Image (cartoon, rainbow, N blue to C red; front, side):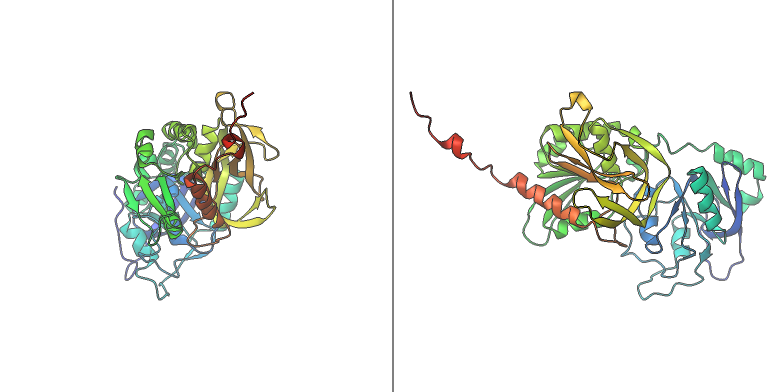
Length: 405
């Protein structure tokens, strides 16, 4: 049954249930659209920024549980959309705001969910559910309401959930990427040009680049190396995005072509995992992932701790101490180090290549809802661009005429 929109005002409560593949079922009230939605159930710990979460393409294929108990009090507006649509499949909250109360609000969160076809549930014990997911790990689940709930037995609902494909091996790149290339120009002087490959990019990312004087060519995920080289970019960027990096062979091959061409590279989130794979490193699925805007990360070079925004369920597999030779093709990309480490669980949160101009982070320096501790990473991109554009300085030794014997 296709989810149907409904207004929260002047309506009777509609029963809803969130059902997990292990049989856990939580009863609540429909929030947003009425119907059924299946996906991986994950929890997000941010106390603010729910609209950024909903419109982040990295959440494609997932049912998001908000750990903060009160959600929706500031409503929703067009300005805070991080993409053109809501991407989460389902949404679960404890205490949904009865009305939006904010001068920037243009509609209620409930109405945004309903208009977007997102089947949600409110009034459930999200603390219990979060503890369950931490112990069991992220699992498949479904949100059911209306006839989708009343027309099936509990056993049938569990079977429908178990028939849903796992997130491991999933590829959503073609679903979330831009359809056609777009060029974004800075207001002032152009510092350089960046080819940004959209794997599920958020709107704040190109805004950070443009604000720093970078011309951004926003490109579909299917862009070829030849098309990138035709732009003659000063740097290439791979964005965040949903799915399993192990399924992104096409983007790994593209990045290897970029690295072979000597073009500076910066990647965020999915882009970090793609860099890891391009270097010959493995990736793995985290038990329950990192999702929220309060994650502490250590910069291994400066020893500074940053509070950062995360949304990832996969990570790069590399020891966090010391220098390592990137294993791909006999180590042709040279040395790589872990540049950032998650302090909650020692997960790799960034890579830095020492012999080629490439770096990446697993978290989100562009986070519109905050925090902004990591915004300097875009300044680092500008530095790389300037270095790439600067003419090579002739060596004094090379310019000295050789003395004839």
